[in-house]
Length: 337
Image (tube, rainbow, N blue to C red; front, side, top):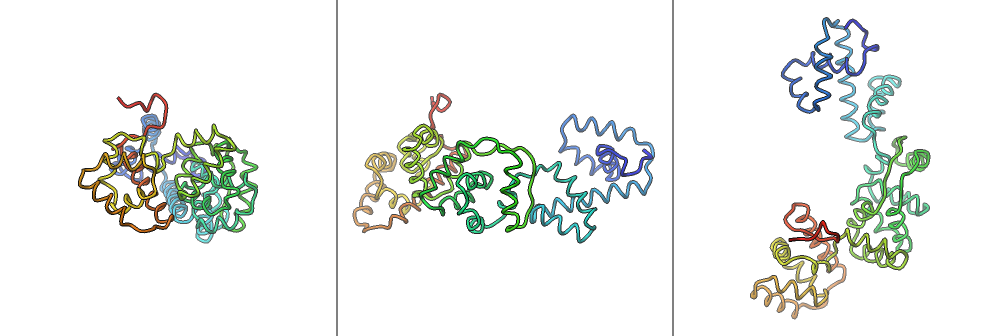
């Protein structure tokens, strides 16, 4: 392999790097490759006869620079990585490294917005068209998007939720145009790949991150505008009143993880059906104690009740994720036997 570093393929460089690392470190790298990649690299390594030290040093330096760039990206995004590399290596060299890296990373659109404070993003998008807001929120982390959606006017919340749910693939030109507006304010970069986002699953994740009042407002509005969509979203969500749909074993398991104060607060304003099923799954002593507490409890703030219910729902969702309970959301796959 007497080629210069610039003439080598990526696989040839990878083979040379592994040779330079030595057998022990190379073996650790191989553990992270699939069988096809291992076969191709092994074949490439076996064909290496002689390596000039200058070429080896160039390959190692390139790998070192790319590793640094990846570290910088994890710290502050591609824009940050590019700035640091430009100062260290010069503009052209830095751009070359970033181009190589981003072609393999396939960074999702609005990466910069996911790193920004939700209040800052809200400040820049709240006056945009609902479709633009929906597109941006669909690319954010669910918790972040939920916080922003909760802070928007109730007049547009349901509309935006519906747009997220019905959104299909978006062209790179549209994404680029929207990103460029935020780029000037939040200082980051854009990507240019066709990306599918949105859909019912996306809006469910967003709604799971909003407060109970916002969730109810949006679903009630969607119930009027698009009953089928509202029903589909409800099937994939779980709210406090849905406790009545759980089996007794799951309810008993949930009660063990809940704070008594949260449960008492939530039950004070819940339906009789919810109270009845919860009392049925408590010990007689616990049920009597709760009833006494609720009788002597004075007026409570609705906000406190909603926060308590939200914590209970979070516990339920956590237990479901852990496989300790099952939440039936409709369909034959959820039938428990």
